[in-house]
Image 1 (cartoon, rainbow, N blue to C red):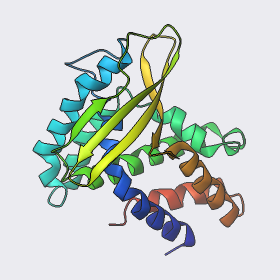
Image 2: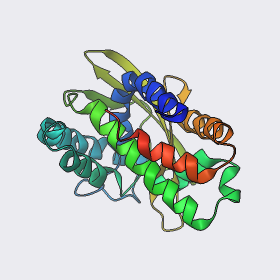
Image 3: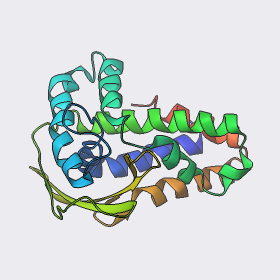
Image 4: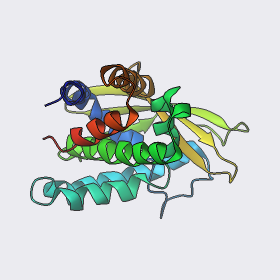
Length: 217
């Protein structure tokens, strides 16, 4: 097992305890039938929460017997609002400029699959959560907003901050999450940078190693 995969597994294990809070992150994402991505982002988060929780409750039992069915159901919930391409490019950092369009597209696809699978496994048994937006407000006039949410479960209380931006079509897109002060965007970017160093700057090897990591466990 490569050093990169070992590092990814260790990091995934560290984040697994926090991934429960990620329920509320991705509770944003299935915009129908509750809301459209162009509406008030606070209302969007509150309305869509029950949709993902419903998926977890109905499909979470398939995580062992039919994981791909469960992962696909979760991905369908996340896809409309989470800007995976933007996040993946941010994770690549300055290396994104050196990568070819094909490499950037490959990493975006790999990153999305890995993130969805890790998230889905982590929350499979956590359908009974209480989520609450702490700073509800009217639709902001600007194109960027931080929405604060509290996630309560039997494990305790986690504070989550979501960064959303409004794109040119007027849709709100999730681009980053902070869990109890831990910036996930920066965490993943640090992982990518370390992987580049470990692989002598070979982007293809980094992508291949990242892809392999989601096959473990």
